[in-house]
Image 1 (cartoon, helix red, strand yellow):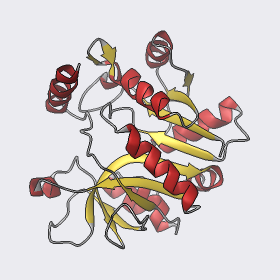
Image 2 (tube, one colour; image 1 turned 120 degrees about the vertical axis):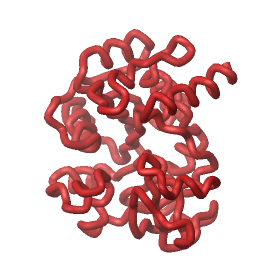
Image 3 (cartoon, one colour; image 1 turned 135 degrees about the vertical axis):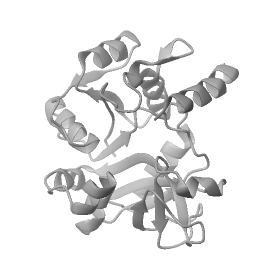
Length: 244
């Protein structure tokens, strides 16, 4: 299926200003994510950003970027503008990768993509097992509750997404912020009004559930650390610089 990978990005992160351009091993976080997306080999990869500095960095490091509006409320709106600007009318599947997860596992990206095709799903994402019970109370770690247990033989539907969860709740997993949409589902989603729960919890995927758009969840083998704080950056640097 004709596929495009788009990574939404912006400099105006509240908790860690200038986050996409912070460097690990001499390469910006956003360019590390681009590298992973290219290695997954699903289709063309673009960064959609509201800041020219991000686009310049991505291009300097061999990637492709497109400048988008500064008025978008969500990353999904930014992605849709990028697709329209690029004129990619023949695209069937759109992969939305988070620009702050340089440790995302390439095999997990491919696994989600393959499940989308196998199950003819409209919208899919990833969840991984929660190894540390303390994460249930972490606001920065989004959780997904699925209808059935996640394993590598199923692609069950999400029942809910939340920031704090009870570790006794069945089928609760760490949500990994990657989405794969059918293009017509993405179009439908961006024309829906932001929902109450979405605004309250700052989770745009709740807009889909509140409007009866099903989200299927595949089991990821790894739980990458996202870069939200200075502490996250230090932790990721340790891992990536050690690997290097």
